[in-house]
Figure: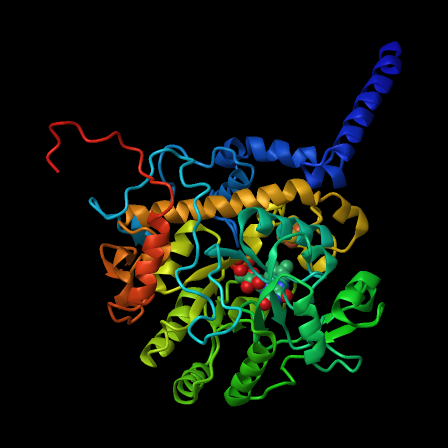
Amino acid sequence: MRWARRTVPAVAAAVAALAARDLIQRDHALLRNFPVLGRARYLLEAIGPELRQYIVAGNDEERPFTRDQRRWVYASAKQENNYFGFGTDNDIEHTPGYPIIKHRTFGRAVPPSTPTAGHDVRLPCAKVLGAARRRPRAFRPESVVNISGMSFGSLSGNAIAALNRGAALAGCLQNTGEGGLSPYHRNGGDLVFQLGTAYFGCRDEQGRFSLDRLKDLVAGSPVRALEIKLSQGAKPSLGGLLPGAKVSAEIAATRGIPAGQDCVSPSRHAEFSDCDSLLDWVELLAAETGLPVGIKSAVGDLGFWQELATLMRDTGRGIDFVTIDGGEGGTGAAPLIFSDSVSLPFQQGFSRVYKVFAEHDLHEQVVFVGSGKLGLPDNAVVAFALGCDLVNVGREAMLSIGCIQAQKCHTDTCPTGVATQNAWLTRGLDPTSKSVRAANYLRTLRRDLTKVAEACGVEHPGLIGTDAVEILDGRTGSTPLHEVYGYRPEWGLPSPADQAEIVRLMTAQAPRGGSAPPSATAVG
Ligand SMILES: Cc1cc2nc3c(=O)[nH]c(=O)nc-3n(C[C@H](O)[C@H](O)[C@H](O)COP(=O)(O)O)c2cc1C
Ligand code: SF4
């Protein structure tokens, strides 16, 4: 037993030292929150591929994000090697609906040769937001990839701060979500302010919308655009309730509500009740703030979109942008039936709405934003081909700052401190180091989009047309994207003038393409 008397204290001391180290380090939220125990996850992650050969789950089996997809985000965020070896393990030929991007052998744009080339390339929007309607504060978004609306309240303050700093580093926009503009949103990143049904952050004591408060808020913060939230893909037409226990003093101050009391978000807006009054409200907000104004919505019945486009065409009023959220999109919490079955998935919903605007000849005047797992390059490329000008990333950005897809966002026990208000768990997430990860991920996505665009022979993802994508039928055939969604061949692209300008902006950057100069005997 003498060995035990010597070994046990030594082991205990080693464990204590390890625990202290885990508690102090700032790279891994999981280890800061669960010292020593959290290491099991990293061990399992490291030996997972070997174990899985003997157990069950494959690289493409988990949802909403497969292991391959998560690995790509994690590696990109850490600027580690995000390549995959040995070739695809997707069952391409036998998967119906699988999109294939068609590269060109000789294109206008020359792809860069090194893996990191293009990492710092500027990738601005091909349209100027608010220009078509001459909004005084119209601007060209610097990045085609931006951070989707996720409220302070559903995400922790540290997560919001990490994303905001990441947005500043990567030169992109962060949408506040409907929970108001918190101190965590003031870390240098530009914002899109979202107005939900409860008008958090711009409401009076009775919960009514207050234009004066909105104007004060906009005047004192880097808000570049306003987004009226009509619905969200994961829970359209539903209100929400934040239980009083979660309404901390900070959340109360941000939202403009009393602390400690249940906080209800109604299912409908009080400021408008149909398309006509919605357009009046859009024009009022734009006139009073000078900002571009858009709407965010999931897609169900198309009647709303038909009426909206007809009114825009006939009356001259209009939205500057529309964000279409797919039914596969994320949420902090929602009833299963809504997440699983209400509203169309992104590609179907987006293409229907785009067509309505195109049939009314409005598609070149509206900036189209997409969301719903578009933080993965393959999905994003299809979105751009269908006519998206910008993509918003939500859960993929959460993955980049440490989310492990534990899917406990609705329980306030998020182990990585991303989606919780629990002070101990939130403490684990270091906003400084995670902001760098968020920025790395955003830049890598932009780089991949640039590379794919160049492989297709164009300078910018917004110039990828529907002819560049085919959808396989899982047997022997495939259908061009424009046929699948009933597009006319010219749809999905910006106006000729916007195309010329974005080509000019992209080619004005440092020359890319890594070849040596042609030899004296070159023939072309
Ligand atoms: C935790 C969480 C909170 C969200 N909060 C909001 C919100 O306040 N307003 C909103 O419009 N969408 C909200 N969303 C939806 C996202 O903005 C986004 O539209 C959706 O998740 C699809 O993008 P993704 O697939 O990249 O996550 C939230 C999503 C998540 C995961
Ligand atoms: S609960 Fe899980 S899925 Fe939700 S943010 Fe936290 S780690 Fe991610």
